[in-house]
Length: 354
Image (cartoon, rainbow, N blue to C red; front, top):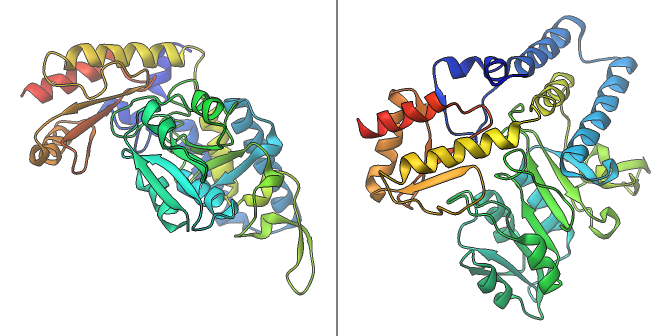
């Protein structure tokens, strides 16, 4: 697939310089077609029957396997979720934390992780996203390091595998801004959350959780997918593997759409994303202060006056350029994907200069 053929899969790119996959990725026609076909089938034939449910359950297994191939994990370690927030909550509830325990996190986390952290009984130790500061914060009560692989604010990449090896503490990696954006595997991590609708350009409310050892994580919020057998009093046999943690249903069409999205990326996806990111940095460094100029992710953030960030993003939107601000930080964030063209970036800086 050529670059032109790849871009043609995304109709929105005809009118928008789409630089906000860190929030939602652009929707490709094969993904939308699968969603529409699923709804039309359900409308005409209903969501009923043994064959329908067996097919849907088989599709769930296909999607688990596809996520597993993406991050280098066995299918049995993958749970389908609705978001990275779902995954973080599943882990933090299942660890059996108490008020005597501590979790180390950073000042630059999204509420998708911070919310589940704040709801846990453990003491949350917050430090700047610096590996040395994070390692120094680990003490005898630390049960978990919970942070992002790629920071949603700056695009900085944290060395989480090295931290785990150095500190000997389990790591929960929020992969919202890494999986699908940069080569990001589950190896060496205890827990990895995945967002389906961001860099993977999948349907809304999709994601996954990779659990290194499902048997060692408690199950505190069971769904119908959690059991292989149960009794009238509610006692049940947990389903083998990470499937036991799955919180809810995905429609047949959503499953097919996610498979279509996971099959989209061309073999040159990473090289193109890196090229676009580096060009974006070169264009911006002449115009603004970059937050993390050496970051090896596909996020490029730059500083503006705090009160000017949201109006700037709106002005760019009116000119067909999609970026976002980080509230309260005076930061505007640009997401460069494998679909990003030189024309997109030229349009962005022209609108920025205008």
